[in-house]
Every structure is written in structure tokens, then in C-alpha cells.
Amino acid sequence: MFIAAGGVLLVATAVIASSPSAGVGGHALAHEDRTLDVIALAAAATLVVIAATYLRRWRLSRDHVQYAIAITAALSISAIVSMKYGRMWRLSWWDYHAFLLVAFGITVGAIVREYRMHATATETLRPITARGSFEQISTRYTESLRPLVAAVEVKDEYTHGHSVRVAEFATRLGERLGLDADTLRAVAEGAYLHDIGKIGIPDAILTKEGPLTDDERRLIEQHPIAGHDIARRAASLAHALPVIRSHHERWDGRGYPDGLREGDIPLIARVAAVADVWDALTSDRSYRAAWTEAQAFAHLLAGRGSHFDPRVVDALEAMLIERGVRPLAHVGESVLVRDARELCHHDVLH
Image (cartoon, rainbow, N blue to C red):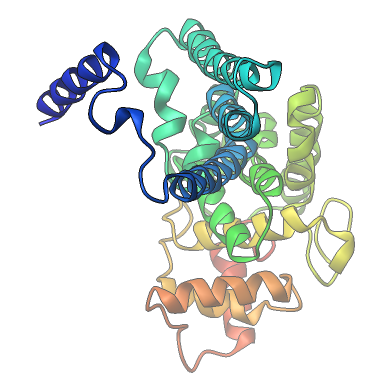
């Protein structure tokens, strides 16, 4: 089908090029100027949408090809304006050609650059085909991040996949809260790295089936500081540091490591905290079986305004209700908190 259409277009182009004034080629069509104005306006409007879309995608992924596409769309708008209002054979008319040449040169250059970095067309173009915000962000996790998170998760088979699930869920919560693209990327990358400080925690403590001793608890509560110290050595991770350090703070100020409360806790850390607890409670662990979504939902609602930011819990509630999840009925807050302490190692968290 595409080959046939291309053939027809090629023949038509050849005919027109061989005799430009044949047929209607030498005469203006009815309402031609107005029609061209409408077409130019529609094309410019479409390019504005494309530029805005790919600029947002670049802010999520930091992928050079998507940034190049956004620039190409913007320069193409300039080309349309130049073609419409420039005078034939004057500099203003030649701008049209320059804009298009530079625009497509930028995109081709970006594709070549990414291909040299990734060596495969699939990896080069993967961010372009990615759909959701989290998929956009995760396509450009650096090669150093994945092994770092894997090194934590290999210490405890029950936490395998926990980091990426928390990052994805936190991103969805952030979207529900209306966070901008840069903040969503900070949430996702911080949530992905939130447990890296556990690299230094002995396996015997991480996988312990019974209750932790006071000394063991104090040791494990240092992992946000340890993770912060690891991540701050990379300047590119500065935006993720608040999540890594503060994802165990509580709205009422009884969290750790800094005892922050309410608005003093970075928003991205408050979002990640809810996602972290949700995934921890709904996943199997060495020390307890997974809770049902209804139980976890009820627990998070019970912690609204004490453990968790009320606004973030409200966003979670809206998301879960849309999915048809309802909180477990007839269970009091004290029971939920008691059960969480019995089933989780860290405070009321995992």
C-alpha cells in the first residue's frame, strides 16, 4: 500500500516538475490564498503541539533525540512563517530553506550521536516509542544505576523488583498530584534509588524473620543517610537526594533520620513514602506474607495525617477507587498499626 502510494506520488511529482504551468499550474485556484493561510496555520498549530509534547518527553527522559525533535518542530514553525511572509529571492525567503536545513540536521545529528552511544537502533529509538511517564524516565536510567539497585536487591530475594515498582507507583501518584515533568523525574529516580543505603546492612538483619533488636533497628534506620552519602557523589543525582534521605520521615515528625514533619519533608519524599509502603505491604517478604490491596489501602488511609501526607493519600485513594479497590472494612486504626508493626521490620514501614 505504501509502496503504491509512493509510486503514484513520485510519478505526479515528475509530471509537475517537467511542466509546472500545465493544466491548473499556471492559474490560481479559487480561494487559493485563504486555503494556504488555513493550511499554514494548521501546520503551525500541529508543530506547536509536537514541540510541547517532545519537550516534556525530553524533560522526563533527557533523551537527546526527543530534544532535537522539539527543536526541529520549533524551527519548522519559523520556516512556515518565513515562507508565508518572506519575499521571493530575498533573504527573508531564503530563511525558509535555512530553518529546514538546520532543523533536520539537528535531528539527524542527535540520532547519529545516540546510535554511537548505544550501538543499536532499538536502544537509540526506544525513548521515542515509550509511552507513559515512567517508561519515558526509565529508558534513560544510566548503566551505573541499574547495577547499584540490583546490588541491593540481590541481598534479599523478596525485595527483587521492589525499587522499580516503587518508582513506577510513585510516578503515577505524582502525575495524579499534577507534578511537572522535572519533578516526576526526581520522584522516579529517587524512588528507584531509595534503598541503596542498604548495601551496607548485613544480610542477616535484612532477611531476619523475627523482630529486630534495638541495635539492629538503629543500624537499619541509618540506611537513608548511607544512601544519601552514596548518591550525592554523582552530581546528576542531586535532584533525587531528598527522596533517598527522607522517604522514612513521617507527617507527624516521628520518622527518621531527621525527624522532619509536615511541609518540612520534601514533597517528592512524601510521594515516594506512600508508594514505598504500598509496595512493601502488598509484596511477600521473608518475615511475612503479602497483604491484600484492601488491607494495605485501609492501612494507608489510617495513617493519613499522622504517618502520611493527607494530599498524597487522597491521590492514592482516587487512583485505587478508579481501579475498583476498596479499603478493608470494619478494621480500626489501632489494629492496622499493630499488625503493621508485627509484619514489618521498620516502624510502620517495611
